Length: 113
Length: 111
Image 1: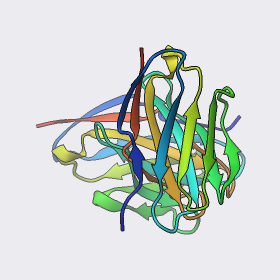
Image 2: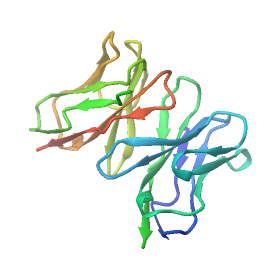
Image 3: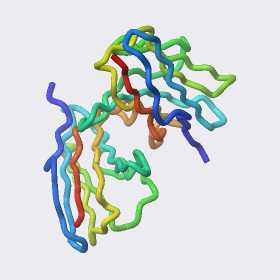
Image 4: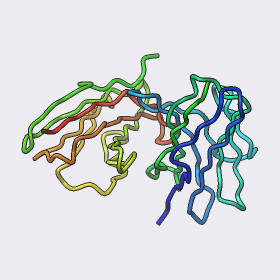
């Protein structure tokens, strides 16, 4: 069955440090890929998406993600985190057009001052 | 442009009761998806409606149902509530199905 794995449940980084959140998917073809962020008590906000083309995708709030077909990965990165980035981050995939979207379990990001 | 709105934001129900949650999508969006979010299971897909038709369905029991109206507004209903139904229920709208925009959710507590 198709699945999305976010191996890290919690990650703690210092403010100003770089960040990488991992995401792997299990599927034979290239899916549509997304990263969402959820602040406490809020709904999810789309950070970026990959459908096709350039494998390095730029998103909002200074985030970027790179699709690596050989590794079935879509890792999220940010060169310098801010305290306001503390939130939960979800990777999601849509296997085929008009299919349901499957979310990973999420990674909670903590920021040290 | 107004975002996705969900009503009510908070709800407390008793086991065995039923509940109806409402979602108003972004204007022009024809797809509405529903998710259940719990600490243990994370985000689980319930169903998606597109132009008043259920297009996708998750693995939830028949107690969970939904519908979509001609103006794209959607409701989901949970009958015979169980304690395990306590969760944050999120609605997301989209023009076509992907690139979803989420509402703030309805926090349902079953006692």
